[in-house]
Amino acid sequence: NAGVTQTPKFRILKIGQSMTLQCTQDMNHNYMYWYRQDPGMGLKLIYYSVGAGITDKGEVPNGYNVSRSTTEDFPLRLELAAPSQTSVYFCASSLGLGAKVETQYFGPGTRLLVL
Amino acid sequence: AQSVAQPEDQVNVAEGNPLTVKCTYSVSGNPYLFWYVQYPNRGLQFLLKYITGDNLVKGSYGFEAEFNKSQTSFHLKKPSALVSDSALYFCAVRDMSPGGSYIPTFGRGTSLIVHP
Image 1 (cartoon, helix red, strand yellow):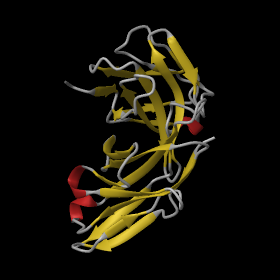
Image 2 (cartoon, one colour; image 1 turned 90 degrees about the vertical axis):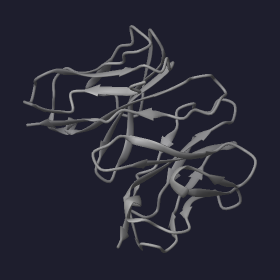
Image 3 (cartoon, rainbow over the protein chains, first blue to last red; image 1 turned 45 degrees about the vertical axis):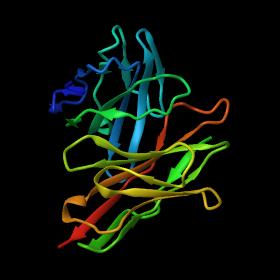
Image 4 (cartoon, each protein chain N blue to C red; image 1 turned 180 degrees about the vertical axis):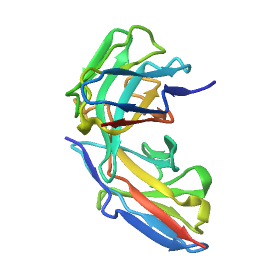
């Protein structure tokens, strides 16, 4: 298993540009998550999904959109990039069995710089 | 509501000495608690978790954590630190009471630096 994969690893965007961060998992996990990590701020949840076709906002969703058309893929879309979106983005997944305790599996991250 | 605090931004320890990385939490009901580690330029990796039962939980790479309900703490420990343990450590909590979130909340992270 490759686990959770993310592309690209690094990207520079100009203000106002758009891009999609890709995330794929091959563990047949139901739950998927997008986090951003800023220095000294820990992880902030952007969006999450509990299954194909179901998504919900996390703590910091403004400026982002997601979709979940398949179990494997959970892309994150930035429509109008702003300097405040400069960050490292992590995708994660977990099995999703309701009451069971979930261990999250993280991808290697995408480092985004908006200039 | 659930929250977690890691009171130290950085912990410094000499190689061979015991280490402790602190974590305290707040939940309405019973907590599920996690520790993750992040090495430079990598994603987070699961270390250990507390669900119920023994208060001392053993995890990967010789780490263990002690759950203390009265002090609402879940400190990460290791008897003898290695230079290779230097990394960023995250504590996370999930409130398992009815109506609690099934999304864990992460702390801000603690940078562990082990000196040779």
